Amino acid sequence: MFSAERATVHRDGDDLLTAGLGLAGLRGLVPPGVAEPEAPTAAELRRRAIWSNWRGIADLSPGGGYGEVYGSTADVPGREYSAFARLPGAQQPHRVLVQVPDGFDRARRCVLIAPSSGSRGVYGAIAVAGAWGLPRGCAVAYTDKGGGTDYVDLATGTGVGADGRAVPLAGGEVAFAPATAASAAGTPSTGVAFRHAHSQDNPEAGWGLHVRQAAEYALRALDAAFPEEAPFTFDNTRMIAVGISNGGGAVLRAAELDGDWLDAVVAGEPSVLVQGHGARALYDYTTEAALLMPCALLALDGLPQPPLQAQVRGAWVQRCAALRVAGLIDGENTEAQARDALARLRAGGWTDGALRAGALSVGFDLWRAVAVTYASAYGRYAAGEHPCGYTFGAQMPDGAPRAPTAAERALWWSDASGIPPGAGVGIIDEVAKLDPAGLRLGCLRELWVGASADADRVRAGIAETRAAPPRAGLPLTVIHGVDDGLIPMVFSSAPYVAAARAAGRDVGFWRVRNAQHFDAFLGLPDYGARYLPLLPYVYAALDRSMAALDGEGGFPQDADIATTPRAGKPLTAEHLALP
Image (cartoon, rainbow, N blue to C red; front, side, top):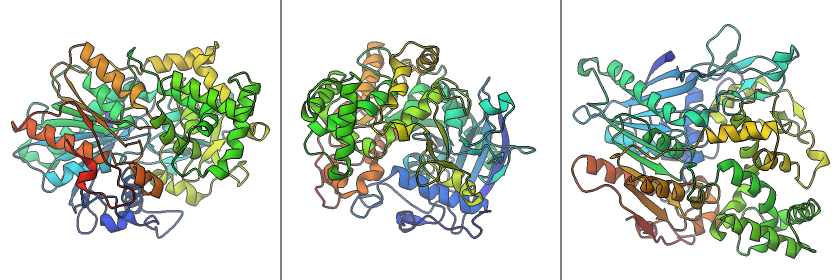
């Protein structure tokens, strides 16, 4: 089950939680440097990975409250144990990593199991679970759950080794060695492959098992760390699973697995799909938003900035006109077309709060990024087989593909988010120049609504991801921002809670007013003025759950949390109104 195991020590200026950077270093706008750009050390890559994953998840901006009102960046010395893990029948491994603090509480054996948010690498939940668990003497077990940043340069045959450094695919143990359409045909491969899109394992279908494997590796790591205290087992070690976004969906999938191995679950803003109760698949509403939202937003006032309206209005007007020509909306002028696009989104369940927050995903092209990657993942396509012709790679300023440099390859593992664009890798779309209005996105939409072998293949992969109710008697808390514009609450967590309760399960549900999906973007002034971070509520739910397991109080119950936007002022506890 586990291979390429490593154990490293992190003390004296190189701790578990911030790699020695502390809050000031994490707030730095420039990532930690490397001495040799084409050959960074494993320690340098780890420090950069921790820096980038903190900044991708938490609001660390001055006045945002992190480290002052909530959260911790304490210096926590300890050891890390890491490995490649593989699910039965999977073509590719995934990463697991366990952080064991020197102050591990042996009297109250505690492990937090933390799947990464989004498609991030193995440190992708450090701001979620590590920040809460490590200072409290808990070990933290991370998994990239079949995503991650083990990118492969197909032209040079360069992948990523166990310690994050770039290594040749041939002759070494690498984190990801993809099959490609080109290699199957005997022709040279080009571009970049990454595990979420190209593993051909549909990793989302196995999210719960990824979490279970991370828990099993945590017991193995604790046995190695404290042999005099062994064995560590599910019976004598407390296990709490916690995650946000895709990580939140993963812990909910773990909650449905048989066996009394989990003691509590906390899921923040989860991407999860159930049958009925108004649920919609991520791929469904993502492709709908990619097409219609740029036009629909013209009919809404008071959008947060960015995107700057003066800069994007022309492209959004063009999208309205193209949608009208394609017969996807009605209206004789831009205003009427925008109103019709908005009405269609509202009819599909979108709230105005989610649409306003969704403007961020339009501005950063996140809808297309998610749709392109997930279409490949759900359909189990190899690199070069994307049904809509998209590929990935380094790009020229005009978007044309080019060869990545050795220095770029060296930093993919530490700097990437797991889904391009980012870290010098983008979406290669050779047709885009002929389709300035963006209707090529219609190909992605057809994989959900159309009738074709490829559409059947993608929909079959999505069906494999549907969640079941949690195990009876398992304490479970779901937390979601009411204004979430990337994973709207009405499509994901609200239906999940309804389905769980219909099955007779007891689930606590915190609905947080004035909260959207991305804490990390609250450093943008307009977003920070409008929205509150979600991490404080995840930490609070962990506080309540741990206390309840200790026999002190109950587990979180339902709450509609009426927050107060800070309107440009420093965050206080009064703004959060924690239940």
